[in-house]
Image (tube, rainbow, N blue to C red; front, side, top):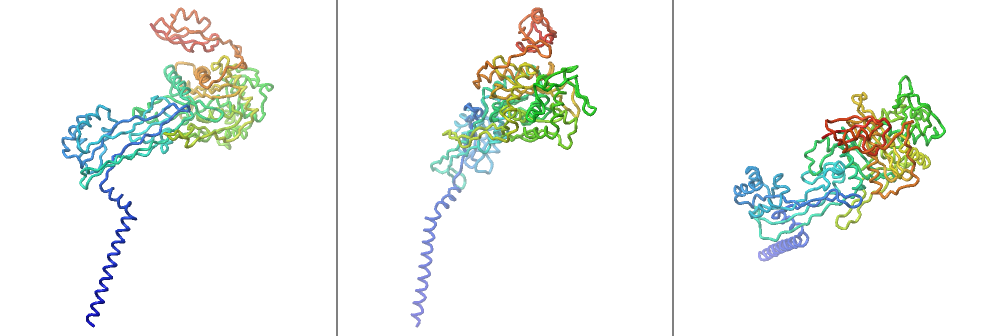
Length: 635
């Protein structure tokens, strides 16, 4: 009986031990087979360290592949504190090479951290500095490749491109708007160390960084450079409070060029004020548009057939009274009897008031809304404004009158260009955009492509054709004469808008503008020029902005392969019974020679010398007989 009980206990113990051993074997098998990768990763994480390798940010290109934003390779300094044995010596030597305080480097070298990036002192090191540090051959001191953003054209397109911060993050413009797409995936150099941070003699592992996507814009760099050059000239000649230019393809609302002044260098954005770098004027600025807005009133009136340009007449006596408010014409005494085509050519405010009255507030403001005013266009850039329109229920006869010629409301430049594009392209409003496609950097394969996006039809093709004809006549026969280009069909409209400050109109302070397009029969480019308070010149859009537009359009004709036309509307060299002549070039002449050459003009001189170094207006612009010509003299 005793032996039987003992035998059962032994058998039971044997079974328990056997089950325990099987369980251990099963557990080991499970760990080795099913959890190997997980546990191996956890183990590696305990004794592996990563030295980051910065990925290249995607490039920004123009429509033809020209590089607008790229990367340059620099070197950055990284310390592994646990691997540095003589922290004082290492800190002293590195501080001397970098030209910084010993304390600054020692603080990095003695921190209780696995990896310590030395910045800003250790970022963007030159080759010479990096070589000196490398030659020290200290343990725990590493030099890593780093990608730094670079803008080859410096200030060109700076507000649109934007800039990046010290860690290559987009902070404004395209860099911010498309930061996710432009940002790549950083790589690393993986090394191994024990629990005390001492480096183990194991092979390093290199994880290659992946570059971000390239962003291809609708911008044409040649048109952009023409715009930038003219803006530089504007600043030099007129010292304006601000200036901006936008060029757009009216057939799809692709932005071909845009810039403003004041500007900044994207490579050195820290030197500019936040007010300058964060205000992209072509999409941010709002102001009363003035007479360029008359294009909208014109198109609406033609679509509704409330006027006939050639048969209907209007007598301009110098002003019109609306509910006791006197609205004057810019020409003293008025233009007299004129057709509505001449109303447009002459930019006659009272005539446009009558156009607005014929339309009525409901129809006019319906078209203003349909042309895209009073709301964002949706352009793919940050910082767009909406502008300000009257509430329809608050529009009385005076508000209707002033809106008809572009006063009392507020618009943005991008709204104007987009709206006028709809008026001349056949009648369709498109959503403007500046990013054409996203590209894989290695294969150049298209990841995403933007195409034209129709918002709505605003006017008929027939009406749009008549608008184009009318605006071509403005350039040939009216206020836009200084944008006329021989043998090319150019249309456009001038604008001179009085600025408002604290609810009151400022005296002698205007935003002068011109919006033009070519060729007039089949527009390929729309150009808007606006100059804020130019100094030392009579402030009219036709005097200041039209010649600037002319210069850019002449260059654009070659860039876009726009041919000359035998059907160009002939230039009228008289306007309002006044004869206009091409102004000769007198720069370089003596004062006496210049005065003789400019016989028939009123001469105003500045300076103490006897030699003409500058003339205003410029040579080869049309100036009325008896007009004022200013000469700058020097020795």
